[in-house]
Image 1 (cartoon, rainbow, N blue to C red):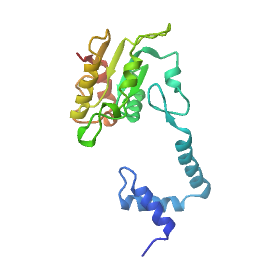
Image 2 (image 1 turned 90 degrees about the vertical axis):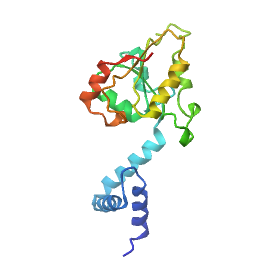
Image 3 (image 1 turned 180 degrees about the horizontal axis):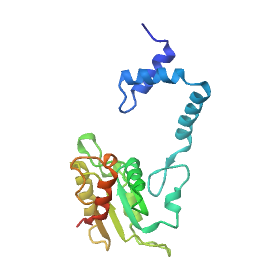
Image 4 (image 1 turned 45 degrees about the vertical axis):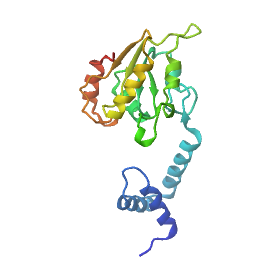
Length: 204
């Protein structure tokens, strides 16, 4: 039996989301149909708001509704330390641990020649500019933490960043190799992440 076109389109849209197959999308669409109208409209407004009002911070490249983001402007954070992560999801994992109170820099991915992702496709140039000595009386960055995953692509990305940083008077550390090989930071449990942060080591 064919669905009405409105339901069919909703299922198609939901099925395009990560981790949702067509069966799951169908169940979710039917669940939405059973919800009260005000709840569904609130969901629609939230979806529209994130697309219209959320953008990337020009400093750290995390999602934000103001620029620079509140975290980059926070004087209570340690502006001498920058933690480099692959994605906003990884940033959320580190921040949720409560173990780090410095700033962040989101690369927006990792180098992957097979997918056509090169250095110019990542937020590497803006990272280098952040590490330049400040022209004003602002605090200079003293430590850079490379908190990427352990995939071959992530390792290549770290190597590229390290090559660009040669000769800079900067302490560079990486998360300890307590992280499971090949696992994205997004899926690491809190205790493993705690050990990796506490046992980070020099990157060069």
